Image (cartoon, rainbow, N blue to C red; front, side):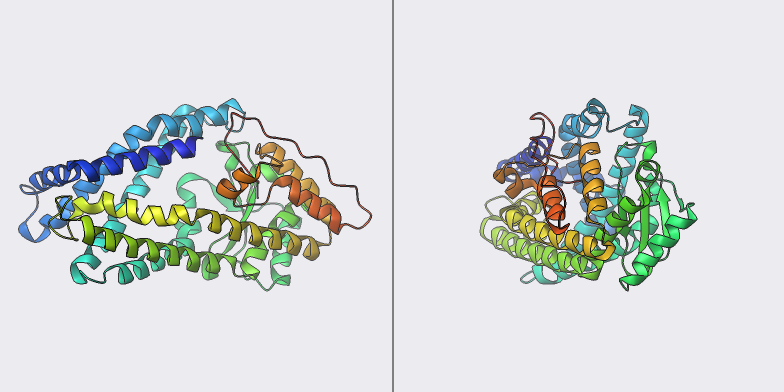
Length: 381
């Protein structure tokens, strides 16, 4: 529900700015502020930075109630978070700072491509975005994770050796196994394999280390290793890059067709950013069910890989059941919810598949419906 409200607010504001001429007024205001502080050579860049900052501020201000409800109030209501409001607010501010920097870089690259290639800008811009996504996936565990969590080498030597051996068995090189201090903010638990190539490392939350057996942690990591073995991360980036490319192509056509009537001076007018984002976002939104279906298929494949690799289907059942309960995941959401919201198969389906794999095991457990007023969560891993 919160995600839907946030999307509606963002789309509504962008549509209002694009259709009423308010975006042109905002750009004019940004240019007037940039004129006395920036030399002629940098005035366009200063205008872009100020425009993006003001647009972002409007989006954040209007979306603040939803962000508070979903990020703090709802998490506290279901005892998922133990983070005080002051620390949550600090994290939000830090996240917004990172998002602001990324937005400035992305829009600067985007409008740089539009100025350099006014007719076919969507192609180099799409390529640049793909490189940025790959770069962030590579440096994220090193540069971004420590901004929000304390990370240290895994102290349990037996478990560390076991996890590193599991990675070696799959031919997946890792830098090491690490613990991240999730308990400072949440009661949720998880394990991950973060990074690409030279930055890839095993991450286990301290909440999982305290409450889960070594068998359960191993099978969760095996699931994450499967995504690297199958190349799911690279496939995902290629598919997402193709979606972005299609969205930018659609945006270029929309700007060409309606830019003048919207009061834009040309395709490189930053006042066209709301129209551009709406056009590209519409393509991504329409394709969302396809993206989710592809993701669910890769998750099923990763589940089977994990069970076969560890030869421990009941540890998988135990881990998924406990993670689903702790993270308040619905075991069997409706088909519509799965189609739109779920990038993982339902918890009930995953447990049933593991139990079926375990010949002679217990029959699948009956599905339970999630509580109606919480966010749709289809899985925990």
